[in-house]
Length: 187
Image (cartoon, rainbow, N blue to C red; front, side, top):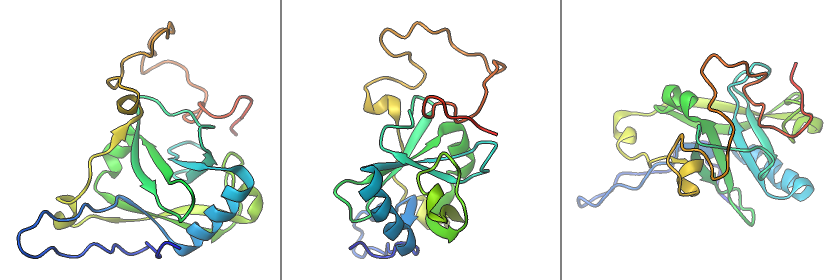
């Protein structure tokens, strides 16, 4: 069973050794318990930190692969919840520019989550608690990975066979999280 990661466990390193990398995202014991239950129901899971209109900045939990990530997303962490496989935690690159100096802790509180997130029917919802990294911690942060890096493409480069024209910043886009399940609606 993983430890409660709501507090950073990284300590100082003596003898001039390279300091241990510090996690950008952690889980509370309540989050670990709920993720275990949800994995039994839905299989492997993933998070995408929402920046959307409906749920503010709620962490959205989906069955792994049900939310499509792309070149505009960065993977902040592979969360260890004591499950057979880690839970990837994604965020849009533009949102990460604002949050890059912030440690995130996924917690659980009573209430109804988003209709798109798998914890919605449980009467509980995921919530992000945050704090600023200290200068020392900032020096120990790992790099983040993009979906394009994991597929061997550079950010912004189209997928092979993608004939869709690039969207301009002013293109109409119905919802910031429109990459969700087919038929999912917002508002």
